[in-house]
Amino acid sequence: MTIRKFIISAFILIYTSFIVFADSNKTKTVNDTWTLKQKTDSLCSWSWEIRNISSAQALEYASEALIYARELESNKLICKALFHKGSSLNNSGQPKLALEHLYEALDYLKFNNDPMLSARIYNAIGLASVNISEYDEAIDFYNKAIVVYEGSDDQEGIALQLQNIGVVYYLIGRSEDALDYYLRAVAILENLKDASPSILANNYINTAIVYMQIEDLIKARFFFDKASEIYNELNDGSGLAHTYLNMGVMYFSVDIDSSLYYHNKALERYMQLANQINYAISLSYVADVYREKEQYEIAGNFYVEAIEILENEDFIYGEVAARIGQGIYFRKTDNFITSIETLKLAMELAKSIDALNLQTNASAELALSFEAMNEYKEAVKYHKLHKQLSDSLFNMERLKIIKSLEYSYEYEKKQREIESLKASQNIIRLRLISFIAILIILIVSLTVFIYKQRTIRKKEKLHAETQRLLAEEKLRTTESELNLRKKLLLNYALRVTEKNNLLSEVSERLREIDLKNKKDISALISSIKMNLLMPGEREELDMLVQQTGAMFFERINSINPDLTETEKKICVFLSFGFNSKDISGIMNITSKTIDNYRSSIRKKLDIPENYSLQEFFEGLL
Image 1 (tube, helix red, strand yellow):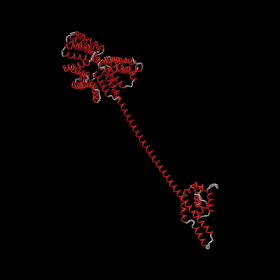
Image 2 (image 1 turned 60 degrees about the horizontal axis):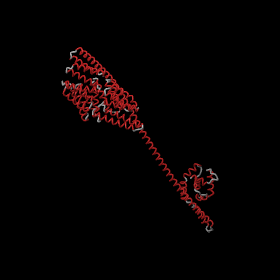
Image 3 (image 1 turned 180 degrees about the vertical axis):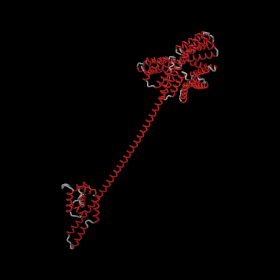
Image 4 (image 1 turned 135 degrees about the vertical axis):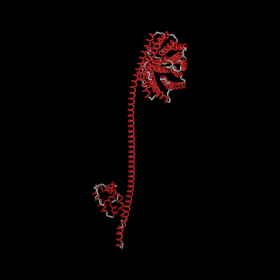
């Protein structure tokens, strides 16, 4: 066991012991449930973290997490654990079993509102489908993941799925399409400020491999160097090892020494990482290089070590590839029987995993080994088998290409429909925005209109209130003036009355005096009578009566307009409380005449005899 595995295992053991101890001291079911949730989440996280280090250990953690999740009956945790177990099964070379778990995880997605988990499950199904050559299914799920990532505007997630689709096209021999998808992914990632450097570097490697396949080694080397630069900055030994391994493959047919140099660098890195499977694959590549350099002893040792590791790790595909290389090595060292036995074993193993391409390679090498032994009958047999397998492989690849083209057509058609739908939605959205804008304008206009109307009403109300206050003030002023005039009239009338009374008294006393010159006395009396009310005073009195009684006269006219001017004046004096004698003195007519006027007024205004004229007229003021 490596130091890294030992540390991880020790940590798990300590954590598990702690959980067991904690569980033994807890009595509440709620706490126990919470502990199981923590354990399940932790196991899922550990499974994910070590998936590229030890697929077996990752699978163990994921399986244990699934047991806890089912025990908790938590749909969310079951879905999560199924995803991790499916991913671990796929990494450990069991894609069919992986798909069973991943499809079950899909069923539990309906209980989880977690778009990112659904995208990860779609991606895992795509990866597992590739491993069983179900390329259409893989592309379908990769595109589903793209839809999820587009919904959350996750550009890095979109780039990752484009890269995966590129891998599919690379595997079915559509290098140009693969390169297109890789470069699209690279463009997205290079434009992202926070893009994952490791994902970008992996895209560079995939792009380089395609350029290597189409024999554009300059561009291939360019992208390998860009990937190496990133991995060096990240101090990512696994990424560097992967880059060196592919560079070794690139130089194998053009520069054998450069190929050996990069394979040895990859081998050194994988040894440091304790990644047994990739270390063994790298060993087989190094063995191939030494075989081509005709350093057979070194090559043989590397093949033996590589095959032993791959057998122990149960990685059949890698083992078959290594045994084919070993079979070639035995033939070149004239160990024809061992070569044939090795290649036949490789053939059987390839059949067990339905690896048609490896069966094709093994049959071709068997034919050459039998030819080297002069066993032409067997050689022809395997040549024919090789042709059949090649034709089958060609037809299969051709069928896959046709299906892929059909799928691409359907996908592009669907994309056009989606774009059309998006365009329609954009139009609807624009119309909705326009409608909302118009509605807002109408609301604002209506608000402004209402505000203006309210302002106008407030102004009108304020104006009316001002007019009312002015009217009240004018009325108060008028009433004040009227009261003042009433007082003046009353004072004037009283003064005139007092004057008349005084003069009348003087006149009476003069009559009683027996003087010699009666003629002069009579003249004096006549003069006093004539001057009881001077013309100027009379005019002033009439004016005061008219000014003071203007409204009073209107009210009397509304009752009976037939009253004479003299009767109206008498009404005014009566309202002030003057008696007939006072009025006669003011108006310079006899009291009897005033009484006659009073009777006429009572009759014309229909005033009862028992009702005081003074009170009646006071009510009209």
